[in-house]
Length: 342
Image (tube, rainbow, N blue to C red; front, side):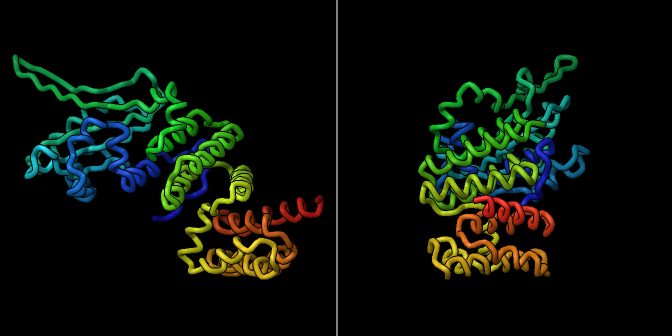
């Protein structure tokens, strides 16, 4: 999975993170949003995503590419030999012909597989009175009616306290989505809520892998301008230090891909020892070299001036996430300035 590009707060990508969340946590998705359907599925038999098949089915429908649509094959408890195809729709904006499109998708899937098709819809738009659930038409006594259940994310605003206590990963996704949606053109307010949602990951009893995955998804969904993203990373680094918890930023994922795990582990876990400082600096240099090939000597000298693990931890994040060497140099100069003022 490739990392998402850094975007302005007003250009948030909603489809991408929801699509990946569905792929990673499909069973949790069903339990959170559609518990009745969840109870009917035999999860011991697994499930199968049919994305390529779905794209072929709708290719000639002139309905466009739907990034967050998922077609999944599951098995039912009371029909062991039956296959059910579930069409999931993450709809992030109002669409006048939405119910017709759901009807077209449903009958095209049925026509291809001749199996029962459940169309399940999550409405992630910001129009509280838009709750499509039915498409129908009739002519001369002939009538067609198609109904589907839909869940409105805006309805969870009134359940915020429950979301804060919920351990299902989609409680976090809903919180991040709602606050991202509510803070368009308000980057400072979004920073506040992104910090709150991210810190809540530590309190829910998740496994380390789930924390890593959800951190990445929240970071993607609640994107910030570069300057505020740096503030966010520094605040989370300080929070993790206070809580004595492992560092979970995209830095770790990047380091694993580049084979830098040993240097990062030693550099981040051995306190203020000189060896730890050296290895942390080396990790910064290796990340920069892997991402940008050539590292100017001025940057090398600047990094070597840092003699405390804490700012180096923040700098490691910048090395892995900032889009350019220029942006990294700006972050480095800010850290050096802060260090001098201390």
